[in-house]
Length: 559
Image (tube, rainbow, N blue to C red):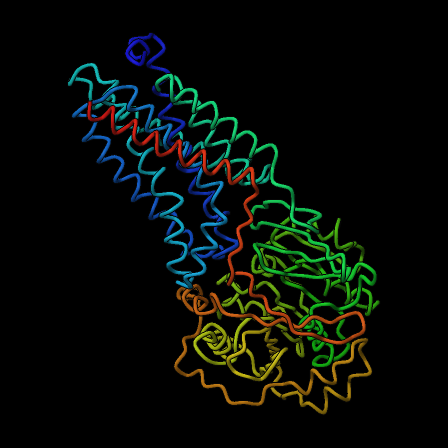
């Protein structure tokens, strides 16, 4: 059968279509790998370095293997099986991706090696198999040695065009519109369908079963977890909105990190205690009129400022337009003449505007990812230039005060110390140096240092009681002489962030009666399988098919 196809007048176009699809699929898988891993390892340079490195490793090995094996024995059936196995593996790895990443987290190998191992599991095999496709296609297409160079050039060019197509379509069209899982299941379907013409009758039947599994998994997605009212893959995050039916708390979750919370019965009540410290800015500066929030999240803090201080003008800059949409729809933030939201990067926003602010609140970091360009001396100089004479920066950092998990914090503190005249530190949970928690850093340019007694005397000017919080100012001596100032040219924040991986992060939540309780953000420590019965059955079938396909390939290759 495969020989008949090879002699068909359509073979020329079919082969090139398969080469194109293979190239597009490789880049699609690489890009989507970052979206799969970001909830577990962040969206760091280590994630992207691992994905790119493993993809290139797989392709390189695939080129070598494909060239060698096609010289020994090249058949269209073998060629098609390579694509079919890649599609089967993609289906299986998509079904198991979340479980695999959770298991890798259990080994606590950090955010350097975790993404590397995950990339090997997810990408190495399909990159290897699809990398072998083009050398096989060259062998099957070559009609004479005189034109072998042109044939090879044309096919590698076509594969690269496919990769370009896969990159742009995945990035600019598919991810913003449909979910990551749907795209991955679609890639597995396309690969299997493109291979189905050249495989044996027995495997054709299996292929149809796999296509049905992929279609079912893509269309009839797993029922959302209890309380999930909205979910979407944005250009930057995996976004979830969750309602707790017991506490009536609505939470914004970005890549498994709890970013913002709102009491559905009292929308302006402070839930996450660290946001209460943002009001310190009004005690450090006189008659604050203009406030900028860098990082919107669920907009709980901007809404609170808007409600409590009617004379205040509030700007919010949030990089993710879907986070803004979720804020408007699910967290009831409403823009008006006093509250304006801009979708942009915080640093770019500051570079574009000449406006000066009395208070700038920087709330754009989380435990697994920090945008390095919002931590450097050059960034803080830009912030300083946009503060009024007695203006203040309020920065929220998740860290410990000291120890190996405080490297990023102490480097950032040294960086800020190189720009601002005065710095105050407020641990939200505890003064114990090893506790990972929200730490609020207040930085100001004016020479005279604001005292605790001055802050307490101004308490009556604000709507939030901060008397206890003022008393929590850290009075210990921090030695950061051995740490480096973060600069645009050198800011290895991923390395500094790595020791936080796998450690408990303690967060304080204010209940309805005003009592603050401590909770552990520790969901990455345990593994509980979330596979449904259907998914488990699909995994079993896909695994058996994959083993059989590999056996069939080996049998054909030997005979």
